Image (tube, rainbow, N blue to C red):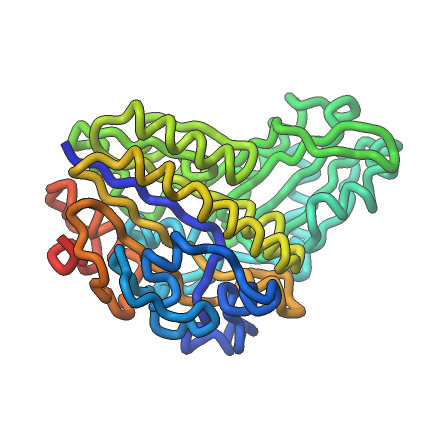
Amino acid sequence: MKRVVLIVLDSVGVGEMPDAKMYGDKGSHTLDHTFEACKGLNIPNLKKLGLGNIEGVKALGKEESVIGAFGKSSEKSIGKDTVTGHWEIGGVILDKPLNTYPNGFSDKIINDFKKKAKIDGILGNKVASGTAIIEELGEEHVKTGYPIIYTSADSVFQIAAHEEVVGLGNLYKMCEIAREMLVGEDVVGRVIARPFVGEVGSFKRTSNRRDYALDPFGKTALEYIKENGMSVAAVGKIEDIYNGKGVTEAVHIKNNMDGVDKTLEYMDKIDNGLIFTNLVDFDMLYGHRNDPKGYGKALEDFDGRLNEIYSKLRDEDILIITADHGCDPTTESTDHSREYIPILVYGKKVKGGTELGIRDSFTDIGKSVLDYLGIDNNLEGKSFINEII
């Protein structure tokens, strides 16, 4: 029986796309710039897969003896956020971007939210780092009980609240109200509950986060796989990003290394279908915080786990490593960047050294997964399976 292990290194872009200037991202190159800022990276396994051989990747140097198939892909959807990138990987292209709110949410949205949530006020209403905004507004929140509302480069409406002041149940209820509101013209990809605890000066976010997503705007590869009686095991944010559509089982994770651990556990358990993992630390902890050293260390840590993943690949398995957008930690911006994503494919039946070139759309990944699993489908995209097997 066949399995695909699909791992998204969240935000590990491989250079600006031709339209990057329109997004304010001209010159971005997450991988090369991280490598240069770290004065080199110890990532021999990724290099052997062909990461440095991808067109436009210059800092790593090319490998002579590549064991994987390698290439990169343009994004056909309009946008550069997590949901848009993952949905396109799954086969759904957005011709209209999900809304982002770089200047905060409109008075109409905020007033409607306050009315429906039956609260007198809110704090924040701006783009912010989640840890920074609770440091800034946490004391006032504790005094007033007003929820802290903030957003980011992604299409998100985030609500932070102290668990002992507002209560988890009330926080989740506010998120449900916001989710019902933020559709149509005011649509956002995700509403996120961001609970925290602690005292002034030592607030700490808890693991009781919840994401309230949208169903993808079309049928994805995940649904095709589930309909064909195969497993779709989601690791990390995957379940939230696809709002559970097509997922047969899921586990959330604490960090990248926990994500690798959970992927390995599913590789011992799942006999067919798809194991789909998102490793978010690259983006959340290092890209958005402009920390290239941390970003580089995260790449090295992942590279150090690849042999464990290889050891659990069966003869009929393939491993695909990719990304969903860029988030160059060396630029002034703390936002995502409009970049190509890498595609690395490995398996006992994969022809090492195969160049996949520049793919037209992330949908080629979802199309290839279904092709490899032998599932008829109507997804957009072009499979690369016949090029590599």
